[in-house]
Amino acid sequence: MSAPIKTIIQFIFAVFFFSVVLISPAFGQLKNQIPTKTVKVMGTGKIDRDNSAKARQEAIAASLVSAVGTVAVEVFPLESLIRNFHAFNETIYSNTHKFIQDYKVLAEFPSTNNYRVMVEATVSISTLKKLMSSAGILLEQKPLPKILVLISDQNPEDPEPKYWWGHEKYLSESFSIRALVNTIKTKGFPIIDNHIIAQNTRIDTIYDKPDLNDIEAINLGLNSQAEVVIVGKSVASISPNIIGENIRSFKGIVSARAIRTDTGAEIASTMQTSITANTDENAGVRNALSRAGSLAGEDLVSQIVDAWQKREEPSNILEIIVEGTGDIANFENFRRILSKISGVKNFRIKELKPDEAVTIVEFQGTAKELADDLMLKTSGLIDINIYEVSQNRLRIELVAG
Image (cartoon, rainbow, N blue to C red; front, side, top):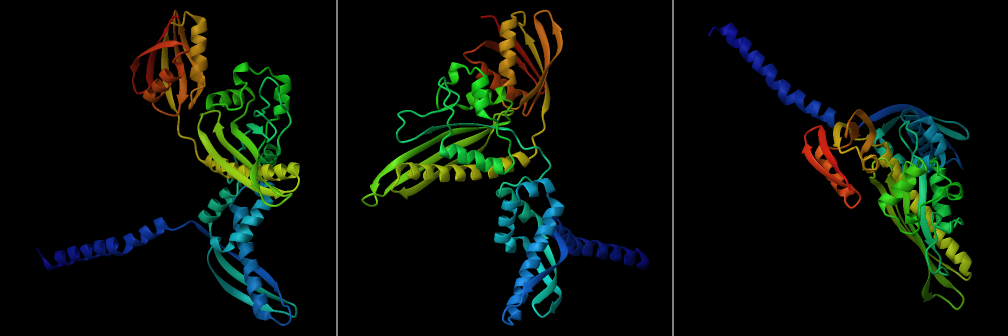
């Protein structure tokens, strides 16, 4: 091999070596880098009693808050920031140091009464998004879900829990439920008015109980066009411990869970307890329940917002061939059960034949998972045989009763 060729080979090898050793780590660092945004802002601090050093620190602190606010306005929907401006300010002022990755003072000027600085600050967008979401602020332009609240309540004088969806239609909201609902409303969530439903809708007697299971709660939610149902209970009690001669302690407990009506998935849950002391029983119960309700509302909101911002899993288009459709009532029962299975949407009939229907559904899962759900959900209601399960197809026989 000639010398020039050897030289060229050595050169190529050297270039390759330095590319792997030196450039690859740089790409690795770039890939793992936290998303940030750098902005230039100004801040002002008031000089009090010739204390310029303190005024300078105040000016820097003000500029860092301004930097975070500037980035937030650019990154998040303005409508969401306006609607949640109180929570936004509390999040920014109490956690500014968590958002700032680094900063430097570009210029500064002390005047007679004020100290002004110009600062270049790098803001961590990922940390900002995380804490904003925890504060219950929606980060994307996505309509908030309509919520139906199905929480029973029981005060110390109540022998049994009370609830609005029962036969007696108890419509007076407890302090805890009112506090929970108001907390959720302040975040911009639309709450369905249960008074209107109770007064204008005939609710089946199967729902006349304080503790609803997921399917029962989802059915009530679907009937009122709710996208999320909050199910649970509120209980107030008087503690046997007597703090003083006239002072007693009161406990309020609110436990609740939030369920999507389209998928049946539980997206939030909470249990909050509040204990207060008072000489007045009514005031003590009210304060304990109101505090527990507010805490439960705040906890649920942050979880619901987080779940609502996540992208839905892609749906699979499945073909379901249903035999035995000559019994119309049986087929209608099957269709109703299928439409209420978590993850099923957009049911439609593709083709009708004598005693057979070819249907199409979108399902967030596999055909095997849908077959398993169908066997579980139809058990005790209608008889079916599933004798074909492929990647994108089910063949089902409806057995006449």
